[in-house]
Length: 276
Image (cartoon, rainbow, N blue to C red; front, side, top):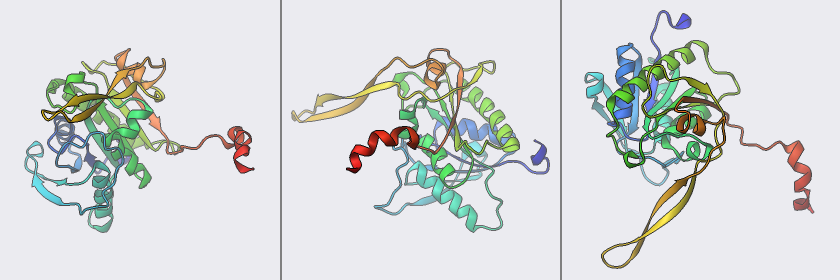
């Protein structure tokens, strides 16, 4: 790393699966073996699917703890959301003039792929990268496809996480060295199940969605209805992240922008009826 010859990358690491999840452990362990300077701040429990929620209605508790996967070095578990972790971590670092700024904010490795716009806006792991980019920091979110039965679960083979972590760290080093194009807010990277070091990487756009969501009605022992949200897999377009990971079993790398705007020159004439 040409601009990192005299120092190791300063990385902020978080994930929505919690500070003890297999994915964050695998990624932190690989980073530690490469002598990165790592700051881990993550929810103390599973917070999948909370998106970019920020905690306003109650205080956030931050507890320093020793992390076994960093040989006892400290990490911080919080009661808030993944986005809360980013806000706290970046603000705290700016207040500590003795500490260098973060080179990169990293999220993952998430248990379950996060392909499609739908997932990026729903995922707490992607929210780490999203919030970081809003705060002016380059970021990457990493996710690993798992079987439906393992959603929000840590039983995926550790070997797959370890392989994904090696590939992730190779990407991290290249981004720290070269930076991201100014148009890119963050990178969303998804690994297929059974990923290997030889699995090809493809730069692709986000699929709009990949699931049709619905509720499943159940009844408790008292006969009172309750519901689970689930979804059926949709056919996804070729050339998208979802197709790349789920159908081609390749690694998707999707550059994400913060520009949610439509092309006003195209749509404005068709919206003038709202002005009369």
